[in-house]
Amino acid sequence: MILKYQRILKNRSYISLINNIESKERNRFFCRHGMEHLIAVARIAYIISLEEQSSISKDIIYAASLLHDIGRAEEYETGRSHNEAGAEKAEAILRECDYSDNEIKEITEAIRTHGHDGYPEKAAPLERLLCMADKLSRTCFNCPAHEECNWADDKKNETLFY
Image 1 (spheres, rainbow, N blue to C red):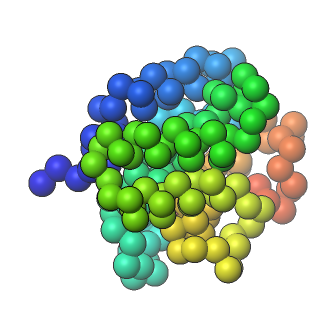
Image 2 (image 1 turned 120 degrees about the vertical axis):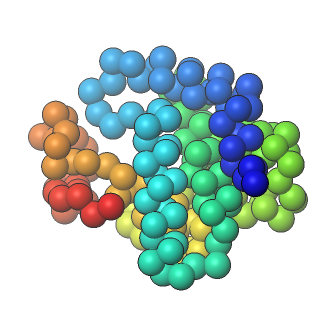
Image 3 (image 1 turned 135 degrees about the vertical axis):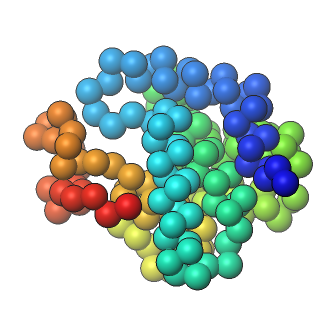
């Protein structure tokens, strides 16, 4: 059975957006937002969902995770929030990949709001999961930019959690 999120990986618009982000971040010293990060977020989010016995489907978790940073290139070009830009771009890609209106709404809302500081307890379940996995995906303990990073020391991941 092919899950819909696998269609995202083959979507031309998605591939173009990811290639653009990776190109713009090629010489970036700090954390990057390319495919490696997106897949790490998806896997961590899914592990957490299993640990918490969440009812959110793997397909929804992977779709949100794979799409959550696709607005980065626009943010670099125009200054517009990558969350807002990404939610718009994600909606079009999700439609092309046959997600339902309800699924699109859930995923794009999580993308739009995933950049909270910390793990918002009042957040929707997918938003909370995405926010947690996004932060936990960073290997601060092994990062060459550790000292120059603008993350507060108490926010940096000093060990591997997932």
